Length: 477
Ligand SMILES: Cc1cc2nc3c(=O)[nH]c(=O)nc-3n(C[C@H](O)[C@H](O)[C@H](O)COP(=O)(O)OP(=O)(O)OC[C@H]3O[C@@H](n4cnc5c(N)ncnc54)[C@H](O)[C@@H]3O)c2cc1C
Image 1 (cartoon, rainbow, N blue to C red):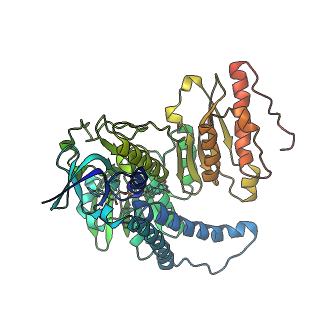
Image 2: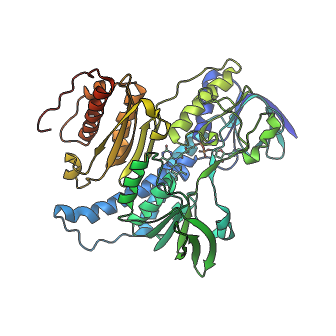
Image 3: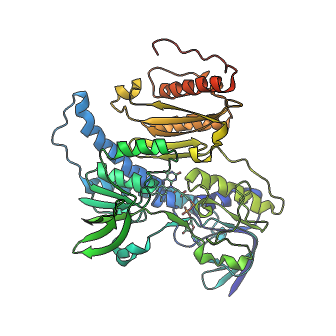
C-alpha cells in the first residue's frame, strides 16, 4: 500500500470540488483532488447544460407551433427528434470538453482518478493501493438519482437524467415519475417535442413552489396541456414487449395502468455519502447518515471535514455548489481558523413553460404574522399579451414592521429574469418603496412586478399605519 500525506484532500471533481481546489491552490497548501468516475462535472454532462439544450429545442418547436397566433403560417413543420437529440449531445460534448480541460489544467500530481473512502478521521483509501493522510478533507461527491423500489424490477430499462440525453429520438410515449424540477423540465421539453407524456407523482405539487394558491394555479395551467396523475401510488413496473407497463393507484383509489416506450425516473436525488464509510470519521450521523453541517462555514460539526455542493442536501444548484466549494476550500486550508460567509439570497429557477421561480424566502419559510402578501396576475399584463404569453401569477412578500421585501414565488413568462431582479433586491434588503423607485421601462414584463409591488406597498401602508414613501401610480400605465 502506497502512503502519502497532504494538507487537504478534495473528494469529487465536480463543480464544488473544482472550486474547492481553486481556493486551495490560491492558499498555497498541499492538496489532492480525487475523482471516482470521470472528469466533466454533472452540470455539463447530465445536468444543467444538456437539459437546457433540450429545452431550447422545445422552445423553438413551440415558437413555430404558436406562430399562427400572429398570422404566420408555418406549413409542413416536422420535428426531427433524432436531429434534436444529436444537437443536444454535440453541444453538451463541447461543454463537457471545456470542463475536462479545466480539470486537466490542474497540475497532474494534484489530481487522481480513483474512488475515495475514509479509513480514519481524515485518512482516506483511494482505490486499492493508496492511503492518503490529510489534515482536512472536503467532501464534494454530489448526488445520485433515486429509483423507488416498485420500479427496480425493470431498472435496466428505465431512464434517469443520467441517460435520458442518450435517447436516439424523441419517444412516442413517455411516463415521467416525479414532478419536481428535473421531471417537469425534461418531461415537458420532450412533450413539446412531440412525445405523449404522462406525469406521475405521489405528491400533488408541481415543482418547488411552496404557496398553495400558486400551486393550484400552476396545476390549472399545466393540466391544460399535460396529462398529470398526481397523488398517485406507483405500484409496479414490468416489461411488455418493447414497452414498459406501469400500474398505479390514482388519488381516488382507482387502479390504473399504462404502457410507455420510455420511463423517466425523476423521483429525487440522494447525497453520495453511502460509499464513503463516513462512520470512520467519528462524526455523529443522523438517521439519514448525514453529519451536522454549517452552511456558513461548510464545516461538519467541529471536525476538519467540510462538505460542499449537492452532497450537503442544502440547495442542489450549480451556483450554490460553486460558493460552497470556495468556502470549503478556504476553510479547509485555514482550519481550525475557519471563517463564516454570509450566503447569497436564495434563487431557484425552473425552466418549464411558463417558468417557475423562487426569489428570496419561499412562502413556506415566512413569518406569517409579520408578512404582507400581494399578488399580480400576468393574464392581462401588457407585454405578456403582446407576446401572446399572458399566463402567470406572482406572489410577493414583505415584512410589515420595516417594509423590507423578503421574497417572491413566480410562475409566468421569463420568470428567470424577473426572479433575478427580485433576489438581488432581497439580498440588498431593499424596502418595497425603494424597489419602486428603480426605473421600469415600458412595455416590459417587469412592469407586472411593479404592479405587484404597488399592491404590496398599498397593503403595507394600511398595515403599519404610516405611509411608505409615495410611489404614485401614473394614469394610463
Ligand atoms: C437534470 C439536471 C438539471 C439541472 N439543472 C440545473 C440548472 O438548470 N441550474 C442549476 O443551478 N442546477 C441544475 N442542476 C443541479 C446541478 O447540476 C448540481 O447542483 C451541480 O452539478 C452539483 O455539483 P457538485 O459538485 O455538487 O456534484 P457533481 O458535479 O456531481 O460532482 C461530484 C463528483 O464526485 C465524484 N464522486 C462521488 N463519490 C466519489 C468518491 N467516493 N470518490 C471520488 N469521487 C467521487 C463523482 O463522480 C462526481 O464527479 C441540475 C441537475 C440535474 C440532474
